[in-house]
Length: 407
Image (cartoon, rainbow, N blue to C red):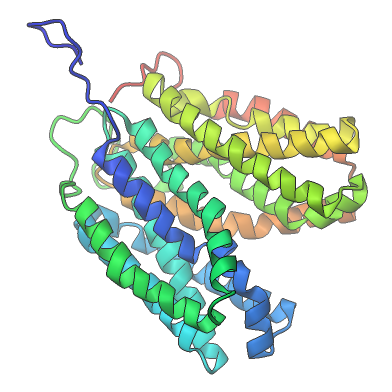
């Protein structure tokens, strides 16, 4: 913004308040994310007498149930004050952590996992992205990127913290400590960060279009713009989940060593952070819809490299490509719904997207495993991905022509 009187730029600087909240809420959501819970998988199996298949089934059921509940619960971000909603999500996380720490019978473990998934992977992460996209109107891309940084920071720091803590306390005690920290530290902090943010109603005069003032959930699946965007933003989480789950099969096919794969994950995280940073600024400069056209290309190049390059370069290109696409998709999937629908029903719309994503990521590993089992070559998979990444966004991106990218 430029002052008419002085000609001096008065654009706000620094991190938007919504970005600060998004960063912290996303970081707190780590307690309910797979990478954190998975650190205790061996302990769960040993103490509850579960096989890997049984634990996987219980965890998958908790994840699927909590994800589908977001189809309805996502809308609380549109009707509740943010500070009330974040208290609910933090209470769910703290209760889930306490149940796991106190668990005797296996049903307490299952209920704890369900609450962790609903409060963390579900509501806390959802509120982080919705708040960034709704309230940071002038720097929406950068605020949504801050939510991505929160997720990445958790992935980078919490495994080491847990490993160090488990040298000092039993895993049950650690979960009880996590519950206490959530209640005594995270909840007051998130409440304080959410308090300055206004009520969720869209302000009068906001420029973002709202095609239907009272869009119903089921009507989203009849809305061409919503479906076209889904064709793009669902692919990265589905592909990344499938590739990471079948990393062992890929390692056998390409003679990768476990240490190489571990270094690949470091590259993945670095590329994800870099592209979240860059993507946020590109969204502020152009638009999320403009960026949709290019988001799948890095992952497609990485997949193509599996069939064309030697083992080592193929690994680095794959993890770099997947990380770049993940970083771009994280900010795009937070901002694009505002560009299409405005902010009034952002929580409901993103809640529906989150539910569809959970179901899709459950099916992705099944599809990739089936294709690999049929003997489909890595080159064929890579070529198919390149074809999809170049054709589908070009055909699907709604209203790209002449879009100015401003609120």
